[in-house]
Image (cartoon, rainbow, N blue to C red; front, side):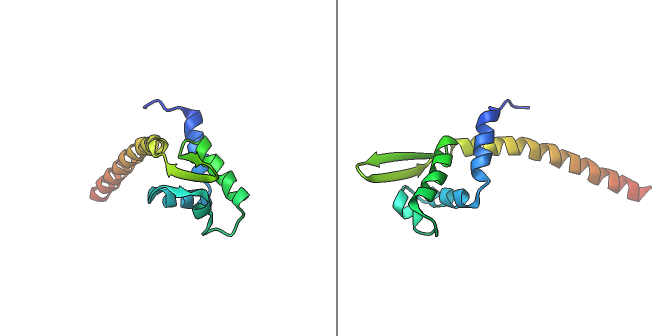
Length: 111
């Protein structure tokens, strides 16, 4: 198995566990955006959105640039790649198990 930094993966998966944060990442995937623009679609305060952004920043999924009072955010996708690699490893594991099961069931039918 490939070695992964467990702490980093825990932080990424924790950040991805919330639907608001996943929606924010989807917005960021379309391009850089200000915190105010990020907050517009949600029925929550700017401080509440800011808490979500801090979680994403801690996970390394978001970078914030500050220009005076304007905070512009952009997506950092590298941590998502590590999470995808981790998931891919286990997908291969389960695919091989399911292939073995399918072969067993096919052999059982013939007998």
